[in-house]
Amino acid sequence: MKNFTSVYDVADVAALVNEALELKKNPLAYKELGAGKTLGLIFLNPSLRTRLSTQKAALNLGMNVMVMNLDKEGWALETQEGVVMNGTTVEHIKEAAAVMGQYCDILGLRSFPKLQSKEEDYSEDILNKFIKYTGIPILSLESATRHPLQSLADLVTISEQKPTGRKPKVVLTWAPHVKALPQAVPNSFAEWMCAADVDFVITHPEGYELESSFTAGATIEYDQEKALQDADFVYVKNWSSYKEYGKVLSEGEGWMMTNEKLALTNNAGVM
Image (tube, rainbow, N blue to C red):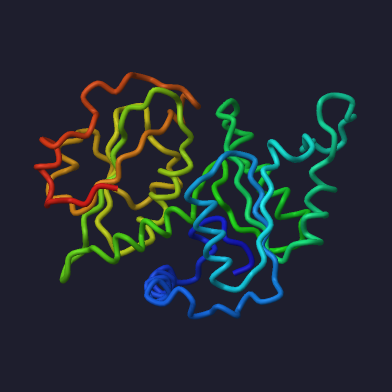
């Protein structure tokens, strides 16, 4: 694959999961594969697990790793074409990305949505400009609409723990949170589950429907307890409204996950 930004960059999802499971058994199996290569990790937003796990994976492959917290350590980037840069921006993304492409062989990028404009966020403007101007493969460390690395890791976990002889039932349930969160993680999780051999159900209050292209093939159930019946895995996640973009529509009373609700499941693993 040229880039890794979504499940659609993967030719065979099951084969990739199996390869990941084998590599997990022997993390240093390809310790010389990346010799002489450099992975650049560019963070426009904070990261803990994604950053550490990606760095560790690169080191296990024998790669050099350069990390830059661009929001704190770099110049403020202008992302729009044809504008006069007489404000707070210092460097154009076109030039900055090109420089990164000269020093790196692969570039990992994390860039969150602003949750102000649906059109801007869902156009993946920042990610696509890095793809365009770096000239090297791009690895998404979470973008405005997806988090493919986390979703792949989630599918690996499900594949490790799934029951034998039947499809596992996987439920993605909305849960309340104190602030508005992006849809990237649930979008991505839905895409990967719809591409996997699982019985996939999404449950949330009305008004929290994800963009339909991410959930095609999933069962949507507004009754949380009905959705949880006989589940093998329960993925608990908050997200803000897509329809009323970026808004928290309710406090989510009654949607908190509890032990009583989990008793409805098939002793489900909680993710």
